[in-house]
Length: 145
Image 1 (tube, rainbow, N blue to C red):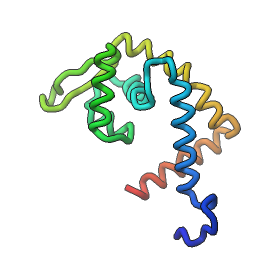
Image 2 (cartoon, rainbow, N blue to C red; image 1 turned 180 degrees about the horizontal axis):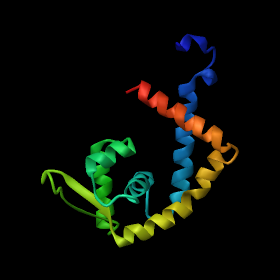
Image 3 (cartoon, rainbow, N blue to C red; image 1 turned 45 degrees about the horizontal axis):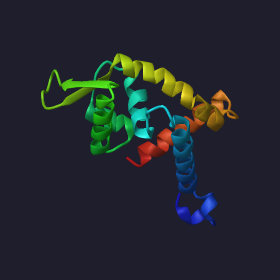
C-alpha cells in the first residue's frame, strides 16, 4: 500500500493519527489543569501506578518519550514528593523510580480528572471496535519499528 491511493489529505491515515493525537493532548492538558500534573507527568504516573520500581529508561520507552524529557519530568515529580528514586539494585548506574504515598494519592485525582477524556474519545465504540482499533494501531506501530 502506498500513499498515492489517497487523493486528499483527509484520506491519509497519518493525518488522522496526528489529528487524534493533538486533540487528545489538548483535552488531556485541559483536564489536568489544576492537578499539578502536566501530560508528561500524567503518563509517568499512569506507568508507575502498577509498578514497584522502574528505571527511567523503561519509563521513557513505555511513555514513547525521550529519556531527557522523562528525566526532567521525574525530577519535577521528585521535588513535588510524588516519586522517589534510587540507584538500581542490579546496576548502580541506572536510576529507578517509584511512586510515593503522595504520588499514589495523586493517581486517583489524575484518573478522576481525565476519565471524561477517555469516555469522550471512545464512548461511541463498542468493546469489539475498541479492541480492533487498539490492535490496528499496535500493528502500525510495529510496522514502523
